[in-house]
Length: 96
Image: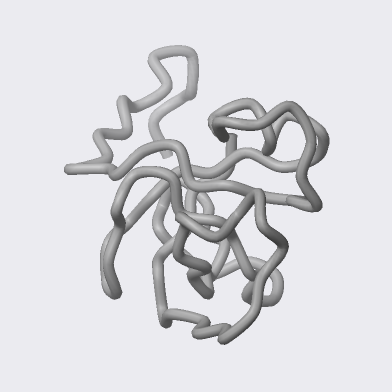
C-alpha cells in the first residue's frame, strides 16, 4: 500500500462500464513523513475520499480486488482514508 493525498478529481463523461460507479481522483504519492514523492497519479476511489484527504491505495493487479467485478482496466485504487500518521522513533537508533 502507498500513502497519498487527494489533490483533485478527474471527471469523465464516458468510462469503461465496470468503473462507472466510481470516482477517479488525482493523488500525490507521499512517504511516511507525508512528503511528496514522485508524480501524481489517477486512482479509482472505492471509499469516498475527497480533495485534501490523506489516503492509502493499492496498485497493480490488486487494484481490482475492491471492485465489484473480476476484471477492469484499473492500475490503482484507494482503499482507505487515513486519520493520522504516528511514527514511532527507532529504539535501535543511537542518539545523535
